Image 1 (tube, rainbow, N blue to C red):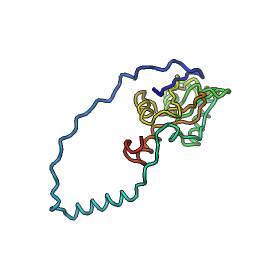
Image 2: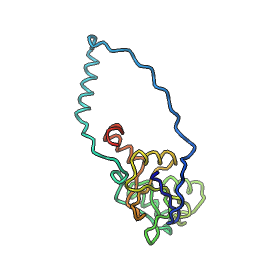
Image 3: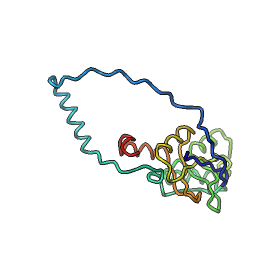
Image 4: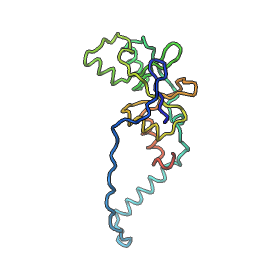
Length: 196
């Protein structure tokens, strides 16, 4: 499995089992009747024309197989002593929702989301001047840049997280993948079978 877990800059034991919560399989719907080609109506012709227009606009899928292919390379991070207020301002400035917390020696310590900041402030659980590490999520689930895209998507769903930091073979932070990145990829390149 491509999951790697870090807590305050140290790699901890990677879980061997997946979480209990799983998606249940659904049964296929019954087949519909055959369409008679002789009874083509004008609305059917219009529908076919729209499909042809849409097909012309699509572009060929590119070879995408690994986390490193779709991760966001432009990283914005914060230090553990950065104030919650400053971290939130950085997220707003760069239009991002997750901010990895790294130490002075570039070790991944935690990750914070704008949702976690807003929740903590709304519940008055902390002060905006407090250190962001006090409310950041730990441990941090990560993937390597050579982790398969499907496995990356499964980890995001299984662990109910919105972002996965991407690390290289030297455990250095090289990028980040969010659910939005995967949705964008699917909307650009069509069915998963075409590119994974």
